Length: 290
Image (cartoon, rainbow, N blue to C red; front, side):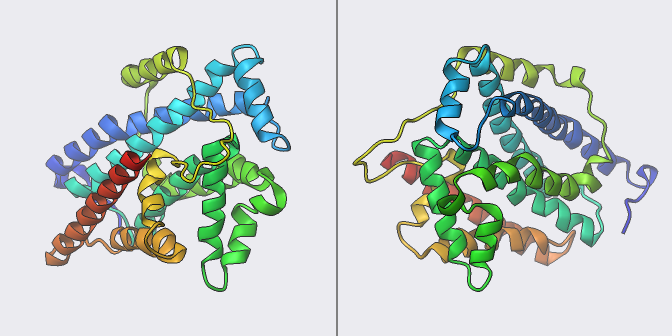
Protein backbone atom coordinates (compact mmCIF):
# COMPACT_ATOMS: atom_id res chain seq x y z
CA UNK A 1 0.00 0.00 0.00
CA UNK A 2 1.47 3.34 -1.04
CA UNK A 3 0.89 6.80 0.37
CA UNK A 4 -2.14 8.63 -0.98
CA UNK A 5 -1.20 11.88 -2.74
CA UNK A 6 -1.13 14.98 -0.54
CA UNK A 7 -3.92 16.74 -2.40
CA UNK A 8 -6.25 13.95 -1.25
CA UNK A 9 -5.31 14.40 2.43
CA UNK A 10 -3.81 17.88 2.99
CA UNK A 11 -4.28 17.96 6.79
CA UNK A 12 -2.65 14.54 7.23
CA UNK A 13 0.25 15.62 5.03
CA UNK A 14 0.79 18.77 7.10
CA UNK A 15 0.82 16.73 10.32
CA UNK A 16 3.16 14.18 8.79
CA UNK A 17 5.53 16.92 7.64
CA UNK A 18 5.41 18.57 11.08
CA UNK A 19 6.28 15.30 12.82
CA UNK A 20 9.06 14.63 10.33
CA UNK A 21 10.62 18.09 10.80
CA UNK A 22 9.93 18.55 14.52
CA UNK A 23 11.16 15.19 15.79
CA UNK A 24 12.44 13.14 12.86
CA UNK A 25 14.86 15.83 11.72
CA UNK A 26 16.34 16.25 15.21
CA UNK A 27 16.61 12.47 15.51
CA UNK A 28 18.50 12.18 12.25
CA UNK A 29 20.85 15.09 13.03
CA UNK A 30 21.67 13.52 16.41
CA UNK A 31 22.46 10.26 14.63
CA UNK A 32 24.74 12.04 12.15
CA UNK A 33 26.66 13.68 15.02
CA UNK A 34 26.87 10.33 16.81
CA UNK A 35 28.29 8.63 13.70
CA UNK A 36 30.86 11.37 13.03
CA UNK A 37 32.06 11.50 16.64
CA UNK A 38 31.92 7.70 16.85
CA UNK A 39 34.33 7.39 13.94
CA UNK A 40 36.79 9.71 15.70
CA UNK A 41 36.51 7.72 18.95
CA UNK A 42 36.83 4.40 17.11
CA UNK A 43 40.19 5.46 15.68
CA UNK A 44 41.54 5.56 19.26
CA UNK A 45 39.63 2.59 20.70
CA UNK A 46 41.13 -0.88 21.19
CA UNK A 47 38.57 -3.65 21.83
CA UNK A 48 41.32 -5.90 23.22
CA UNK A 49 41.73 -3.52 26.19
CA UNK A 50 38.36 -1.75 26.38
CA UNK A 51 38.47 -0.12 29.81
CA UNK A 52 42.10 1.00 29.50
CA UNK A 53 41.40 2.21 25.96
CA UNK A 54 38.35 4.23 27.04
CA UNK A 55 40.29 5.72 29.96
CA UNK A 56 43.11 6.69 27.60
CA UNK A 57 40.69 8.46 25.25
CA UNK A 58 39.20 10.31 28.21
CA UNK A 59 42.43 11.36 29.93
CA UNK A 60 45.33 11.35 27.46
CA UNK A 61 44.22 11.64 23.82
CA UNK A 62 44.03 15.32 22.76
CA UNK A 63 40.38 16.43 22.73
CA UNK A 64 39.49 12.80 23.42
CA UNK A 65 37.11 13.64 26.26
CA UNK A 66 35.26 16.12 24.00
CA UNK A 67 34.76 13.62 21.19
CA UNK A 68 33.78 10.86 23.58
CA UNK A 69 31.28 13.19 25.28
CA UNK A 70 29.88 14.25 21.91
CA UNK A 71 29.41 10.61 20.92
CA UNK A 72 27.77 9.81 24.25
CA UNK A 73 25.35 12.75 24.40
CA UNK A 74 24.41 12.64 20.72
CA UNK A 75 23.64 8.93 21.06
CA UNK A 76 21.42 9.60 24.09
CA UNK A 77 19.66 12.38 22.18
CA UNK A 78 19.21 10.12 19.16
CA UNK A 79 17.45 7.38 21.08
CA UNK A 80 15.27 9.75 23.11
CA UNK A 81 14.19 11.69 20.03
CA UNK A 82 13.62 8.48 18.08
CA UNK A 83 11.28 7.23 20.82
CA UNK A 84 9.41 10.57 20.89
CA UNK A 85 9.19 10.64 17.09
CA UNK A 86 7.83 7.11 16.98
CA UNK A 87 5.26 7.85 19.70
CA UNK A 88 4.19 10.98 17.79
CA UNK A 89 3.74 9.01 14.58
CA UNK A 90 1.65 6.35 16.35
CA UNK A 91 -0.38 8.92 18.28
CA UNK A 92 -1.19 11.15 15.30
CA UNK A 93 -1.74 8.13 13.03
CA UNK A 94 -0.14 9.76 10.00
CA UNK A 95 1.81 6.74 8.77
CA UNK A 96 0.79 5.29 5.42
CA UNK A 97 3.08 2.34 4.97
CA UNK A 98 2.73 -1.07 3.48
CA UNK A 99 2.93 -4.03 5.84
CA UNK A 100 6.58 -4.84 5.13
CA UNK A 101 7.68 -1.21 5.52
CA UNK A 102 5.83 -0.86 8.84
CA UNK A 103 7.45 -4.04 10.18
CA UNK A 104 10.89 -2.71 9.22
CA UNK A 105 10.16 0.67 10.80
CA UNK A 106 8.92 -0.89 14.04
CA UNK A 107 12.00 -3.07 14.30
CA UNK A 108 14.17 0.06 14.16
CA UNK A 109 13.28 0.64 17.85
CA UNK A 110 14.91 -2.54 19.25
CA UNK A 111 17.77 -2.12 16.77
CA UNK A 112 18.43 1.44 18.01
CA UNK A 113 18.18 0.21 21.60
CA UNK A 114 20.72 -2.51 20.88
CA UNK A 115 23.01 0.05 19.23
CA UNK A 116 22.90 2.29 22.31
CA UNK A 117 23.22 -0.67 24.67
CA UNK A 118 26.35 -2.06 22.98
CA UNK A 119 27.92 1.38 23.33
CA UNK A 120 27.55 1.07 27.11
CA UNK A 121 29.04 -2.43 27.05
CA UNK A 122 32.07 -1.20 25.11
CA UNK A 123 33.01 1.13 27.99
CA UNK A 124 33.73 -2.01 30.03
CA UNK A 125 33.38 -0.01 33.25
CA UNK A 126 31.19 -1.13 36.15
CA UNK A 127 27.95 -0.28 34.32
CA UNK A 128 29.10 -1.69 30.99
CA UNK A 129 30.41 -4.92 32.45
CA UNK A 130 27.22 -5.54 34.44
CA UNK A 131 25.04 -4.72 31.44
CA UNK A 132 27.00 -7.12 29.25
CA UNK A 133 26.67 -10.00 31.71
CA UNK A 134 22.92 -9.40 32.05
CA UNK A 135 22.54 -9.27 28.26
CA UNK A 136 24.32 -12.60 27.92
CA UNK A 137 22.12 -14.14 30.61
CA UNK A 138 18.94 -12.95 28.87
CA UNK A 139 20.09 -14.10 25.44
CA UNK A 140 21.13 -17.55 26.68
CA UNK A 141 17.69 -17.94 28.29
CA UNK A 142 16.06 -18.03 24.84
CA UNK A 143 15.12 -21.63 23.98
CA UNK A 144 16.91 -23.39 21.09
CA UNK A 145 18.53 -20.33 19.45
CA UNK A 146 19.82 -18.60 22.59
CA UNK A 147 23.40 -19.82 22.43
CA UNK A 148 23.65 -19.14 18.70
CA UNK A 149 22.22 -15.63 19.16
CA UNK A 150 24.60 -14.88 22.02
CA UNK A 151 27.57 -15.97 19.90
CA UNK A 152 26.32 -13.70 17.12
CA UNK A 153 25.70 -10.59 19.24
CA UNK A 154 27.80 -10.73 22.41
CA UNK A 155 30.02 -13.72 23.33
CA UNK A 156 31.52 -11.49 26.04
CA UNK A 157 32.52 -14.33 28.37
CA UNK A 158 34.38 -16.10 25.57
CA UNK A 159 35.68 -13.23 23.45
CA UNK A 160 35.57 -10.03 25.49
CA UNK A 161 33.95 -7.09 23.69
CA UNK A 162 35.42 -7.79 20.25
CA UNK A 163 32.15 -9.13 18.82
CA UNK A 164 30.15 -6.36 20.48
CA UNK A 165 32.54 -3.85 18.92
CA UNK A 166 32.11 -5.30 15.44
CA UNK A 167 28.32 -5.30 15.77
CA UNK A 168 28.25 -1.77 17.18
CA UNK A 169 30.51 -0.46 14.44
CA UNK A 170 28.95 -2.15 11.42
CA UNK A 171 26.38 -4.92 11.85
CA UNK A 172 23.72 -3.07 13.85
CA UNK A 173 24.19 0.13 11.81
CA UNK A 174 23.53 -1.76 8.58
CA UNK A 175 20.41 -3.43 9.99
CA UNK A 176 19.20 -0.06 11.31
CA UNK A 177 19.65 1.60 7.93
CA UNK A 178 17.68 -1.22 6.28
CA UNK A 179 14.85 -0.90 8.82
CA UNK A 180 14.48 2.88 8.52
CA UNK A 181 15.06 3.36 4.79
CA UNK A 182 11.33 3.31 3.82
CA UNK A 183 10.85 6.20 6.25
CA UNK A 184 14.08 8.14 5.67
CA UNK A 185 13.60 8.44 1.93
CA UNK A 186 10.38 10.39 2.50
CA UNK A 187 12.07 13.29 4.29
CA UNK A 188 14.96 15.69 3.83
CA UNK A 189 16.84 17.08 6.82
CA UNK A 190 18.86 20.31 6.86
CA UNK A 191 21.45 21.06 9.52
CA UNK A 192 20.34 24.69 9.67
CA UNK A 193 16.82 23.68 10.72
CA UNK A 194 18.16 21.86 13.78
CA UNK A 195 20.61 24.33 15.30
CA UNK A 196 19.09 24.12 18.84
CA UNK A 197 19.75 20.38 19.20
CA UNK A 198 23.22 20.77 17.64
CA UNK A 199 24.11 23.58 20.08
CA UNK A 200 22.75 21.58 23.02
CA UNK A 201 24.91 18.57 22.16
CA UNK A 202 27.97 20.81 21.75
CA UNK A 203 27.36 22.50 25.11
CA UNK A 204 26.94 19.16 26.88
CA UNK A 205 30.09 17.83 25.21
CA UNK A 206 32.18 20.79 26.34
CA UNK A 207 30.95 21.26 29.90
CA UNK A 208 29.83 17.79 31.07
CA UNK A 209 32.06 14.76 31.44
CA UNK A 210 31.02 11.39 30.08
CA UNK A 211 30.09 8.79 32.73
CA UNK A 212 32.91 6.36 33.49
CA UNK A 213 32.66 4.08 36.51
CA UNK A 214 35.65 1.98 37.62
CA UNK A 215 34.93 -1.58 38.73
CA UNK A 216 33.46 -1.64 42.22
CA UNK A 217 34.11 -4.75 44.29
CA UNK A 218 31.67 -5.88 46.95
CA UNK A 219 28.57 -4.06 45.71
CA UNK A 220 25.44 -6.17 45.39
CA UNK A 221 23.68 -3.79 43.02
CA UNK A 222 25.00 -1.79 40.05
CA UNK A 223 22.44 0.26 38.15
CA UNK A 224 22.50 -0.27 34.41
CA UNK A 225 21.92 2.33 31.67
CA UNK A 226 18.86 4.55 32.19
CA UNK A 227 16.84 2.85 29.44
CA UNK A 228 17.71 -0.56 30.94
CA UNK A 229 16.57 0.18 34.51
CA UNK A 230 13.00 -1.09 34.12
CA UNK A 231 14.16 -4.38 32.67
CA UNK A 232 16.83 -4.70 35.34
CA UNK A 233 14.19 -4.17 38.04
CA UNK A 234 11.89 -6.76 36.45
CA UNK A 235 14.73 -9.28 36.48
CA UNK A 236 14.59 -9.19 40.28
CA UNK A 237 11.15 -10.80 40.24
CA UNK A 238 10.86 -13.09 37.22
CA UNK A 239 13.00 -15.35 35.01
CA UNK A 240 15.39 -13.82 32.47
CA UNK A 241 13.35 -15.04 29.49
CA UNK A 242 10.09 -13.51 30.71
CA UNK A 243 11.70 -10.24 31.81
CA UNK A 244 14.15 -9.73 28.95
CA UNK A 245 12.37 -11.35 26.00
CA UNK A 246 8.65 -11.91 26.63
CA UNK A 247 7.93 -8.57 28.34
CA UNK A 248 9.61 -6.36 25.67
CA UNK A 249 8.09 -8.68 23.05
CA UNK A 250 4.60 -7.59 24.13
CA UNK A 251 5.34 -4.00 23.09
CA UNK A 252 6.95 -5.00 19.80
CA UNK A 253 4.07 -7.37 18.95
CA UNK A 254 1.52 -4.64 19.72
CA UNK A 255 3.33 -2.17 17.48
CA UNK A 256 3.76 -4.69 14.69
CA UNK A 257 0.05 -5.53 14.68
CA UNK A 258 -1.23 -1.99 15.28
CA UNK A 259 -4.10 -1.40 12.84
CA UNK A 260 -4.29 1.91 11.00
CA UNK A 261 -7.93 2.39 11.94
CA UNK A 262 -10.89 0.65 13.57
CA UNK A 263 -11.81 -0.44 17.11
CA UNK A 264 -8.87 -2.83 17.34
CA UNK A 265 -6.52 0.16 17.09
CA UNK A 266 -7.87 1.59 20.37
CA UNK A 267 -7.29 -1.76 22.12
CA UNK A 268 -3.69 -1.95 20.89
CA UNK A 269 -3.04 1.68 21.85
CA UNK A 270 -4.27 1.03 25.40
CA UNK A 271 -1.93 -1.97 25.61
CA UNK A 272 1.00 0.14 24.36
CA UNK A 273 0.39 2.99 26.84
CA UNK A 274 -0.07 0.53 29.72
CA UNK A 275 3.25 -1.11 28.82
CA UNK A 276 5.03 2.25 28.69
CA UNK A 277 3.50 3.29 32.03
CA UNK A 278 4.50 0.03 33.72
CA UNK A 279 8.03 0.25 32.37
CA UNK A 280 8.29 3.85 33.59
CA UNK A 281 7.22 2.78 37.10
CA UNK A 282 9.74 -0.06 37.12
CA UNK A 283 12.47 2.34 35.99
CA UNK A 284 11.61 4.82 38.76
CA UNK A 285 11.69 2.05 41.33
CA UNK A 286 15.07 0.86 40.06
CA UNK A 287 16.43 4.41 40.10
CA UNK A 288 15.31 4.95 43.69
CA UNK A 289 16.87 1.62 44.65
CA UNK A 290 20.22 2.73 43.22
